[in-house]
Amino acid sequence: MRATVPTVVAALAAAAVLAGCSPYGPPAPSVTGGTSAVDDLTIDECPPGSGRLTSTGSLQNSEGDAGDYLVRVSWLDTDGSVIASAWQEIEAVDAGASADWSVSADLGEASASSCTVALTRGVL
Image (cartoon, rainbow, N blue to C red; front, side):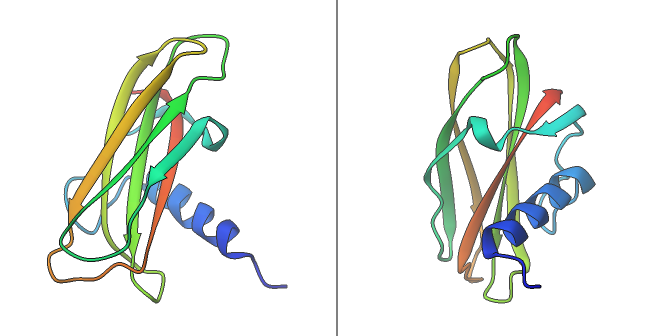
């Protein structure tokens, strides 16, 4: 059985967040009690390409209490390997409230063919 592209992308992004590692830049912070919050995520822009790339969007806390979020963006080459990743912490988003996010990475001459975004909710 063959996994769909969104399933594979989600699994890779989740694994990268949980592992807290990045091929470029410092590792993402750990999220205590972290759970996927993909349903709270909106992606406005997640461009492929080279040079300095920026992914943007928003999140809306659908839980009944305030929470912290970690947005993790990974840029992938044509083989699906991560060539750059970056993250943003967003703390204390009130229940029902929204927050914008923007994550950038400099890929230099490397070229990304796609971009993935993972959102984790927990305690930063």
